[in-house]
Length: 262
Picture (cartoon, rainbow, N blue to C red):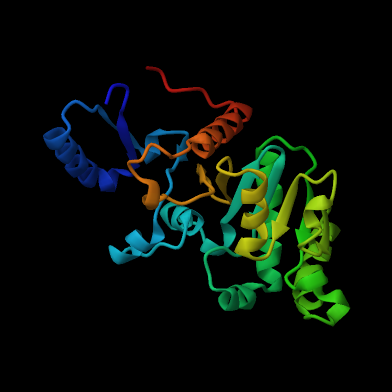
């Protein structure tokens, strides 16, 4: 296992668990170096893929990194969102790991306003002076003027108009199937998980970084799962993990963060 090392990132109150992991590794694989980074002593966190089913079976409340990061940083879960990043495209999700029925119920004017605000702040944090944001609709054809649903008229458009009135460069709602054809957009906002994940994984397979935006902590992960079905076969592709690290480091550079002295 030449060149292999294992590490974990924990808060101070989880340090005892890291010690248990270290002791287990030392017992069964003493040749592998092990590193621990304390969350309050780093400038950003890059997380590996996780398996939500496994976490749920362990009795831990977890529905994705954004809500987890919100809880860990004392933020309201409704102020922290997922942004998928690849190439020059950024896709923010108004809802994430919920059933479609639950997600639709969550599409309220206040939530749309929150995701627009979080997206605008995140883009500025990433170095975009005047962020341009396009918002997608919930229903087919963005509701077709109310023929296919009224969420666009009653919830999404009023939130967009209110943000625009405050000076934000935000437009929409646009039909989800043509949203990504729009040019000159710094970030797209979608209402549902699959509205963003499907195009991202089609256009950038195994190369999508998943940023958590809205929290005070720089946090990035990958846009795919843990792939237990190919574990140990030498088939895993680390491209998305590399992208996640690079995205986070670029934000850190723009904020003037310097690496800690060795």
